[in-house]
Amino acid sequence: MLKIPNRDFTLKGFRDFLIERESHAKDLKVYNLWTKFDQWGARDEPYSLAAKFAARQFNLTLHGEIMEITAFRGPEEEYDDNPVKYYAHLYENGILQVYTFAESKQADKILADVVGESGIYYLWLGPPSIDKLRKIILSSRPSARLMIFAGKRSRFSALPSNIRPNHNRTINYIGSDADEALEELRSAYGVIPIALRFQVSGSVDFWVDSHGTFTFLSGKLAHLFDFVETAIELAREAKRAVENTKLEKVSTPQSQGKYSSLRVVPLQVNLTKELSAKEGDVLVEQLTNNNFMVYNKTVTHGSFRMEATVVDTKKKTFFSLGVLQDRIVILPRDETQFDSFLRLISTLEEFDPDLSFAPMEGP
Image (tube, rainbow, N blue to C red):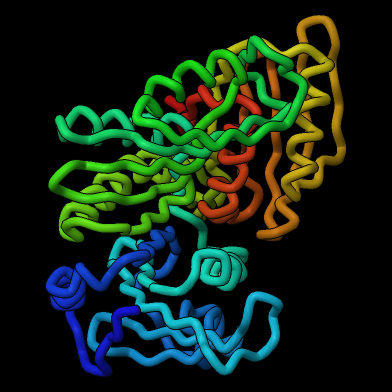
């Protein structure tokens, strides 16, 4: 494991340090998280980013533009004499980029606890985004090959499956024809990719998953960072859409003072097929299985319509949800955070991987 010196870094200086020692950087993981923060704040400052880490007994030490985060917790939550170290950079646009050499299972588990907090979520490369990334990598680098992938299917998925569609399944595939096999298995078994391993001859060998986490195996680390930036740009499209979905108070000048009203911009999700009442029940079950509570549900049969209140029990936020055949309209309640929206969208993408969404701007 590469040892990081105890000194100040700029982000560029930190990356250059890693690149110069890339032969010792095997299994470097780069986590990319969306946050609502543009600065760390103080450990004792309520609701600051630093406070969210400090509340979990993480030690924080700022080295210039890089925050060293030390977690004294093992995989079973007990105190550990061999702490996990992360090195993080917070961009002004709210992206928190976290580097670590820790073993994946342990590093994932510890970081997942922080991602559960309000205002923080994974970069999230949904099925359309990870598919675009795959095509960009393979088309931009003639020597690039998809060598391994992990794919999954939920039995709730609306994605067609020619073979036993009503089953949960996970498929791991290894082979130089993995790209072709992915297309075939999507059709036959209805699986969507959740992790991809690419080998780019003379360049870089790495993994990327649907959370936007990259794992460096060998090659040129600078090339990995290029692909990280590409993934961020793809994920940014989804974040822009949910950030433009809002509920806000608007003050309008009147002759007798100001009149306040609420302006709501819902999010419209377009499904790939019209839903029946039975499929509406499947959708509710999918939401429930992902820690969303559905209540006050009303259903109109015939031309299927459903309305409900949805509570994100992890992020403690509320939505109004309306389903009309092949559309889902999501209305924020109060100041619902983007991270809760992204979590809801990622759950809906398990139900319909080919859906699209955009804010419903009024006239």
